[in-house]
Image (cartoon, rainbow over all chains, first blue to last red; front, side):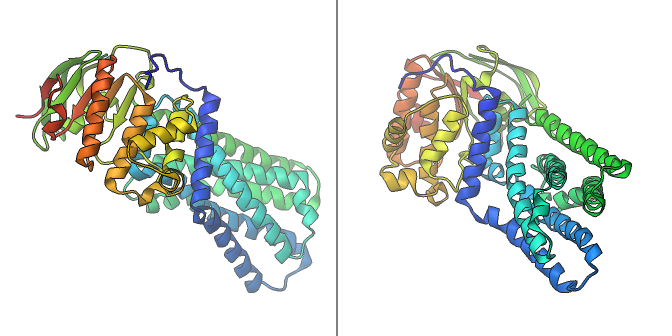
Amino acid sequence: MERNEEISSPSWLDSVMTLLAQSLRVDLSARERLITPLFFAAIILLLFSFAIPEQDPNLRSRMMVAESQLAIFFALQIAFSRAFESERIDRVFDHLRLVPIESSAFISAKILHVVLIGAITMAFTGILSVILQGQELAVLADPIVLGGSFLTLLGLSGLGVLLAAITLRADGHQILFPLLYFPLSVPVLLSSTEALVLWLERHSWDDTLRGWSVILIAFDAIYLTMAILLGAETEPS
Amino acid sequence: MLEVKDLSFAFKNRPLFQNISFETRAGQITRIEGPNGAGKSTLIALVTGLLTGGRGNINFLGASDYRTWTSWIAPDANGIFPSLPAIENLQFWLQIRGRTTSHDQLRECLTFWGIKGEWLQNALPTAKFSTGMKRRLALARLQLESTKLWILDEPLFGLDDAACNQFKTMLSRHTTSGGAAIIVTHDARLFDGLKYQSVTVGGL
């Protein structure tokens, strides 16, 4: 076999796409990783619909946002806590540290991966919640609802990857992750829930709605930036 | 290719080894020797950069990112995605290094390492592989990566005699064609008939 003396490193984008494709391949080969968050979200929504069967029609949109946010929050916590699971096995992560890829490419691929998985979970949860609350499915096609949901997903994904990376080598990873994730996700959840409820109730872009949206975007930026910057810590020094 | 100078490491203020110096040039094999617990794997981890905190100098003499021309094998793991078959594992590790390798080349290499047939190569998740087969897969990856410097910690772990001989042949070809290797192993058979320099760790 010929030795390639001048092996060029793949570009940053190629690295991201290769890592993303591999994460999805691993997910598809172990389908319980995909199904578990969906199953969990469905159980939460069903429990809510049985526990609160009759309610004021005016409260329904508020209830729909609250229960779907809660279901997404817990379902994604399961997905995020396993974000680095395949790299923890057989020292794959150490092997990745010794191939010529930038750590920011690794973290970016992980964020894209969890956003993709999160989008599937979110779409499933949204549709089920709308059906169970007797709302119009068209509400899910509202650009503000879609945008708000996507920003929620971005913020939670940034935080999820950040915490998964921080706790990657921690012995108490399974306990540490939720302990950090629950309190730190409050700003994202609170601002997105308030913004979505305001929009569904009033359908007007007022100052209060703008204020909550700015808080949501600010925390998205903070968590995503922190997640990518933390990538530098994973490189060999 | 690699210069290690006065490398010392202490674990919780207890010195593990002190002032280790060696140089590995093209075509050279460096054998790291020492009893259990002497710090051989720690030395390898320091050299690769997986572990920090040592005192001394480690200089890779070559292209700026040493990771483009070095490969590593861990003593206790193979860096394999257990839910994926052998071919998909190889494809990923080569692709992430920017290498393009044909399906036929991958099959040929796996067959050389005794992982034969469509089912073993492309269907069975590697989690079902035996310890030796996983190591064979890691060595197939090493062969396909075709890097200049191999940093190998117990590469013969779990291998049968036939695979050990295959690895020895591969190592010999590697150094003959200008490659170098740093190897930790307690199996002296590997070095029978091969020229190597010895670095002893421990004795503190």
